Length: 267
Image (cartoon, rainbow, N blue to C red):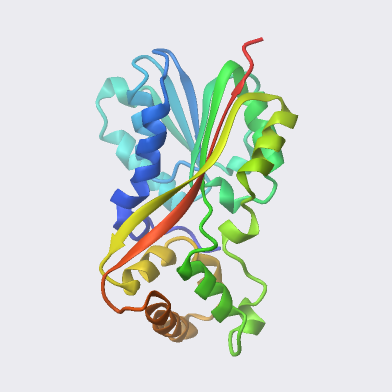
């Protein structure tokens, strides 16, 4: 796919930050915690994790050069003591490898872009020290009106030939809480908690839902289309969403997310 657009992604920064705030509220970090943030994006959450561990360190990994450039610029503006405890690396988290080095493996809205989740969680297990924690959040919103409409439109002429086989990450890779619970237990994790939470995001119109989607779920669809067909696809999607939501005005965008919590046993 094309590289990420940090500005577009952050247009809805407040809403995208809500699941992270929920995760941070549940995390109690030791003063010397070693943290890895897999798929760190522009780095704000990595920095906050380091800030919450007074003497700890946080490493952010992301495969997007644009995101890492923004994260590196963010780091450069930090106070010297915090800057020394934060690092960012351009790397694919699917290749992440470590051996009992971290107290927390954290990932927010990134693992859905990978297909082999069992391998990812096994890598996290190996990377954790005894007693270390796993905290992961992934979108699981394939049943909401916007994604259902995108799938339906892509399966019809004249889009089917180019888009018919494409699925959003929530539909293609994200499984159920029960399935993840079983997988994490098989790997060796304990204290497992896998659950959904639905966030309610007021939007001014279906057009804002499209703008939200352009930064994430729509990316593989638009990447597969010539640039001169983007406007036609978006216009038809807009028309259908106004019908699906029953309005061209204000709408509440319900967004379901999947939270995965687990721990590596202390011995």
